[in-house]
Structure formats: C-alpha cells, structure tokens
Amino acid sequence: MLQYKAGYKFVQSGVHAQVLDFAAAITCAENLDEARRSLALTLRDVAETALTMVLVFHSPNPLASDAEMDIEESIYLHLQVNAPT
Image 1 (cartoon, helix red, strand yellow):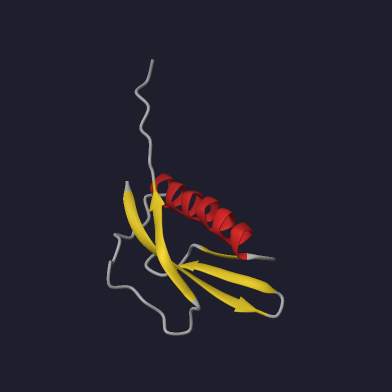
Image 2 (cartoon, rainbow, N blue to C red):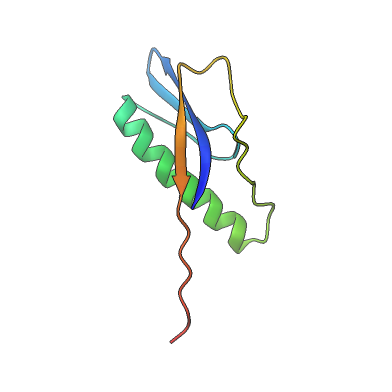
C-alpha cells in the first residue's frame, strides 16, 4: 500500500480533485464524496497504466501540499499481484 496526498478544491461547478504527488491523477465531480471516489479510481488507473507502459511510477511525497486546495488528505493505492496459474 502506498500513501499519497489528495487535494480537493471547491469550484462553482463542483470539486476538482488531484493526487498532489502523482500529478497525472486528476479529476472532478459534482460533490466531495463523488470526487473522492473518482480520484481513487483515477489514481488506480494512472498507476496501472504507468506500470503497464513502463513509465515513471511516482513515489509518495509526504510533504506534498498545494495552498490552493481547500482540503488535503491521504489517499491510498493498493496494488495486487497475481501469480500465473
């Protein structure tokens, strides 16, 4: 499990959400609950794509912060490995 930092900014159209220390993981939604769910799925998809394409996989930065965000909190990435059968 990897612990990243999520940031949420309230805007007129809803909530913008971003993993602050994995910049490719960004999304938006109508409210905070939807933004949290969407960001978790986005982080998983971006991480899987990076691994599949042998791209740079970003390590968590516990000091990541963005003064423009209204809320910052931890977001966790769980990766699973399956052995061939």
